[in-house]
Image 1 (tube, rainbow, N blue to C red):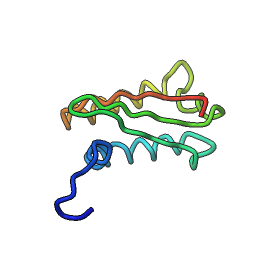
Image 2: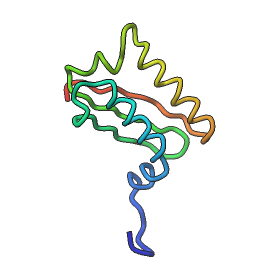
Image 3: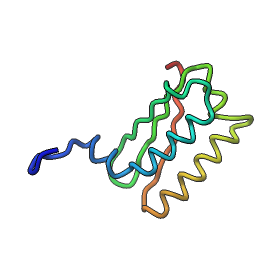
Image 4: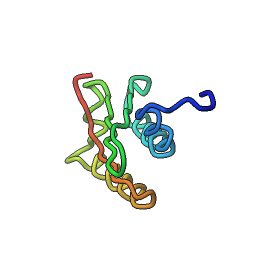
Length: 97
């Protein structure tokens, strides 16, 4: 990016969330059979950030886990990371991708 050029809202969110988004991406990719199809989109400004995780239908169960255990554990870790950064990360798993 050139000096003086302003950042879009999406660029600002993704650049400030890089460690969290990259951790989440690595974690999700290790759980699924099709890691190349994992897409994570951070949405939001300020304190509340929604992290949309898109995975193929066949991999949704692997991300959620039995009785939602994996999803709950990931949410707990995001909450811990958010507390340190004073952010509220919200995990959304999107199917039908």
